[in-house]
Image 1: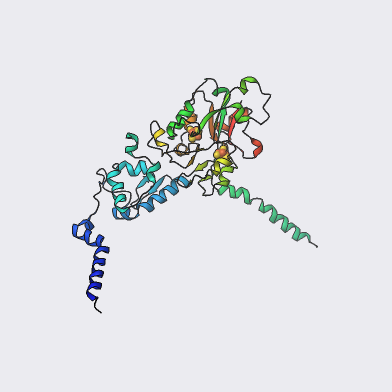
Image 2: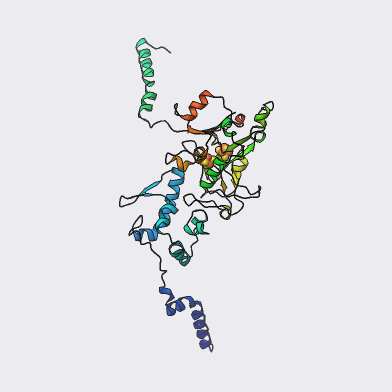
Length: 128
Length: 245
Ligand code: SF4
Ligand code: SF4
């Protein structure tokens, strides 16, 4: 066949275009971007260890909302034996007072939109 | 069938021994379950006309929005004309003073709550202590509960309530557009051994709160000494808000 060159060129251009997000982010260094979170300085350790909180905070909060509202259990015993009051505003936000700099930053990066803040308060709401 | 004397005595003895099971069971089971109830003494309540202390205390504490349009209104505790509260219960010949009174109303925390029966997501349910609770996380806004409640005790959030809350109480969540809300008998305060906010706010001591199962509780004492009425008792919902006229 006489069109080999044309076909190969076509395939190459197609691949370059479709893989655009990969090479573009690779070349510009965007792929290596990790959101920088504003971690509270008041406490050294969250309710559980940092790796646990990073990957499973949503499961913990899900459990919290279930036991607090439905079973009336208001305290949580952490793995280190410390007792914490269950509460998003009262406990989490007490330290992570910069919601925009902490929660939102990572959630925006990961493209998740939790509904917690539709009802649970954080400092900005009172300031209006 | 024939039974000799020996067999008869054996069976009788066993049956009698069976009677000891219940007391023994009670001895080792947990203490009596609480059953929260409220008494509204209208004689004390109507002393000061136009008083809103209990309503303001509740609505401030629970971030209940102040929406001007009555169609959008959200309320946990409010005043309603006597006719609207006890109308159709045969009190038509009651004295004029009573009939012109406004009556404080809130969720009755019914013993047989029809609102609970119809909720498709179990967002509302009756706790062991009798409080009819709402789990706002689960409410899908179908409003079946509002249709089922014979007392109009529930409100729907047609709008985002936040802009209409004067000062947000950080310690209690707000609600969002599309969920139903109502009085929770201050379960978050009861958990801390505090009385409901409305009861505490009433300077006339018109609201009395306590455990129906405890013979020495304030509610039991006042219910024993005074005649009280319920809202629509013929429906069988068994309200736990009692009224003294
Ligand atoms: S008063 Fe209405 S909302 Fe309250 S428990 Fe009874 S039926 Fe449900
Ligand atoms: S018991 Fe609590 S939630 Fe219910 S009306 Fe009184 S203050 Fe409001």
